[in-house]
Length: 122
Image 1 (cartoon, rainbow, N blue to C red):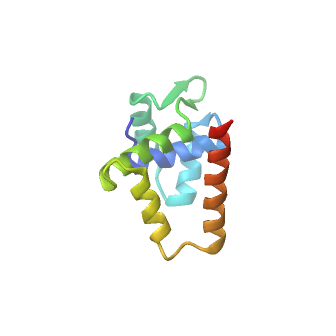
Image 2 (image 1 turned 60 degrees about the vertical axis):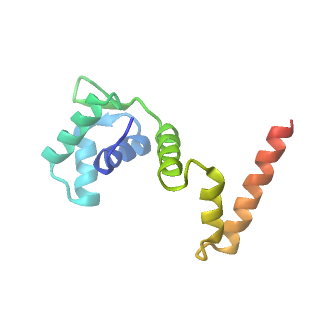
């Protein structure tokens, strides 16, 4: 499922808040990014049509049908396919060659690789 940036904004609220009303989502997005209620409700309805959100009554209660991790996985696969010839190694090389990574970030990446290696040898 491909979610547009506007739909991701709605989903981020749901993932953070849990099940909540469309009104509360609208209030949060109005404060955070200045959306009016009609904009928020339109985007929520698009998410419902994509089966990303389930609506229930009373009070137009919204429930996320997909997790943030599922969306991240799909977006990562698309990113690797689109920009890195389908190669996770090329993505990783790009990250390592990025001069903006701090020593702390590099240490964390090394740790993640070590943990992954340990998990696979078990």
